[in-house]
Amino acid sequence: MADAVMRGRGRWGRLRPVALAIGLGGVAGLGHPPFDLWPLTLVAFAGAFALLMQTAGWRAAFWLGLSFGTGYFAVSLNWIVEPFFVDPLRHAWMAPFAIVFLSVGLSLFWAAAFALGKLLSPSAWPVVLTMTGAELVRAYILTGFPWAMPAYVLVDRMVGQVASFVGSHGLNLLFLSAALILAHFITQRGRKRGAFAVASVVALLVLGWPMSAPNSTASIPDVRPIVRLIQPNAPQHQKWDREYVGIFFERLVRFTSAGEARPDLIVWPETAVPVLLNYADESLEIIAKSARGVPVVLGLNRFEGNRLYNAAVLLDSAGSVSAIYDKHHLVPFGEYIPLGDLLSWFGVTGMASRDGDGFSAGPGPTVMDLGVLGKALLLICYEAVFPQDVRAAPERPEFILHLTNDAWFGNFSGPFQHLSQARMRAIENGLPVLRAANTGVSAAIDAHGRVLAALDLNTEGYLDVPLPEARPATLYTQSGDKPVAAIVVLLLLLTGWRKGGRMRLTPS
Image 1 (spheres, rainbow, N blue to C red):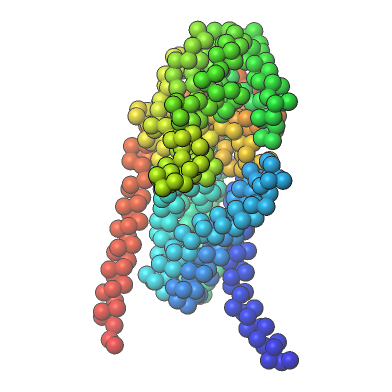
Image 2: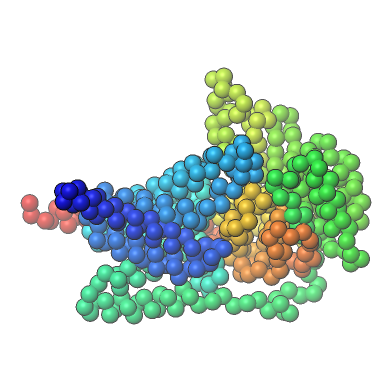
């Protein structure tokens, strides 16, 4: 009996760090919307780094990073289960697998970062560099998925404006460095602890300084063009239901024609028109009539040959389609099956985008000339997640126009996190963002990432907002992620070279 008890205690002793790391990861995820408890993210990362310093060997560090990342992504990406409950009888069984596989899969990047950080130094301080590098890789590899980057918890802080110089990845480096300082305060003793206490206070003051509120009376001149953002509030389980399609379309048309004072542009959200562009002549005629000479940008799907595209079109003042943008950064397994076209050559049919089984990608980022408003960079839904997509525009636009259907993301965290990332795109590039969302959150965001006006989630209505002014091109717009990536790689190589030199000088 005593042996069994001791074995049980031994197993718990081995599992306790794993359980603690998962818990710390979950706490770290609370810095993202809707909680917005950014100090908890900082403290939790500091706790994970403190555990890493006390971990023996890279293998234990790998499991620590895997556990911490799993807890973090399970909390911050909990919305990933929502699409499976749109049709629960068919798809709900997949929800647990989705959250587990995604959380563990993404945490592999952090596990590798923790292990490499420990390999490079017993004190594991290089983890700040390896974690920044891991987030860079996560943003680009296999089309990328940089959702819930640690830096995004700082979007409401003054330090978040640093992203206009070094981007979100540079902000990651700054945030993780602050967490490392706090970790040293936790683990150090004696005089060093006092020094790290002072450094921790400075870091907290820098990170915690709030962003100033916009001056609503002076931030946007009265002469600025007016844009109407329409939010029809079509829940995903009803959006394509024949009993409701007409209701939502009538709602969009009614909001388009509302008011005597006419805006300069009207914007409908992603896939707002319930028919393909190829067969939408009657619908477009109704929309143009209700717009009363005002151009309309609206989302809908279209076929070109056998290929299906998720598109945004400009319906000009005469009611003609004068410009088309096709979404180019598609959602893997959501909008297309990776390698589907290749597999079709081997007889595996039903997944090939070229045959209309899933969406095809458009040619790339495009700016659309919107007359008195200037040129806009069009982003559809998921594309607002990627800093590199905004920088890839063929020319600098006057603003970013974001059409999205966040009904897929549920009502708890996903829509608010998507809004937060759109705000970070504004900061990085010094460009205002106007977003029309199906169920919300539709919003006008200024070039500092501040929300000037918004419609609540799950409400129907429209916003008439003056177009905020753009700032001059930012340093990040001109340089992108390459400087941060180069600094991380250079410092890691230098650290590895120094470690190799110390090993050669150590007598055997």
